Image (cartoon, one colour):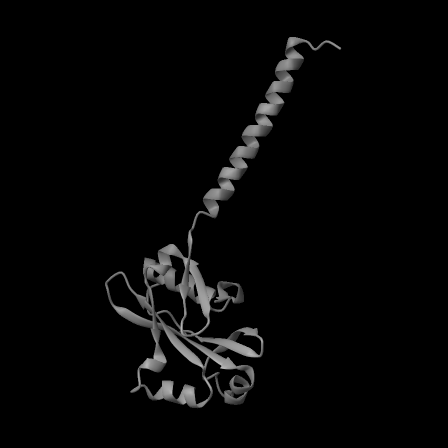
Length: 170
């Protein structure tokens, strides 16, 4: 079987076109997923949280139980909180803002601390594993204008802290 020059060119063109299309598709998917994720420890809670690197540089973790003058922290401990940390956000202007509280409870203690007639005192259950609960109490509203970079970061972070996939056992 002999191929004409035009048939060979047509076949080469088809292979080249398929290869270029595949490479462009691969590059497009890489660029849309290029946001590097950073893992941040929530110690003493036995979890980490994964956030985009652009947001991670604004975050710090504070062990709330270490602040013995904090009455709410003492109340959480009395209710059974095994660990409690605050995720702080440092704005572009350098100001520090408490963003969310993260509480680690035995499931029975967490459920006992809930009052069905009130908002959850220690946040919403995000992860439940091995009869333990990781709960998050995040902000009700953003203190930043939505169009600013801080506003965009906080909006993204808000959706991440209530996503079970964001947290990993450490």
